Image 1: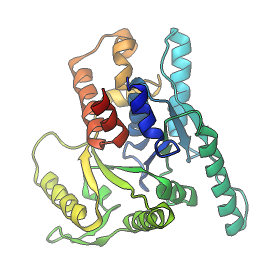
Image 2: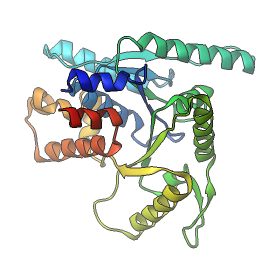
Image 3: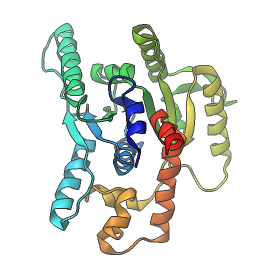
Length: 289
């Protein structure tokens, strides 16, 4: 658990640290990744709040609700975040809707300021004004992608003959503009991390080509890419219970079946992901420990 000095290092910003999960395509494991980040930080002793900007799907919020229900049913004392859902405006005027959504997002964030150290925001899998607000406000932006050219199309236009990057995608251009707005607003920079989920275990030509594109994007648009979560059945099983791999030791595995070797390997995968995110307050906590 971080000591008081490490906790204060977060608040040197004068506000909670903002981690945004953003991706305009579905099926990349965004909400699952968000929940594992949330619980990992909770178990390290940080106070965590969540803002769900997808009021229709509410995947992250449903995950948290499942967690609360499971803990009550089993009599478990699971660490819990403070969750908030921000809905889209129903105003028909674009200007009025954007002003309304900006006020809603800011209110949700302000309401968490004195209660948490970190806020994790889960964006919808589409381009919305709320998502763009969150991207601009992010300290760390995490974009999970499946390790395929279908998902890489989110980041760049790739030549099908030589697999060279021809230019950034619409999403990458949106993030670039968000970084510019953030720089102008308060001089801060956004650390953009691309999380490679479902990476194949075996070496393959496709995997090598994907990595080549990501290396080029690192140079051209300033992303960092890190390993994320593999394709494992356990992630789907845990959602209904609201659990993460970081809870399985206390829960004695899934439904008390004990920890399997696969569970242990997956939990280590999550820990490696957290370290690779290189969140500055966690680095300070390690130094001060």
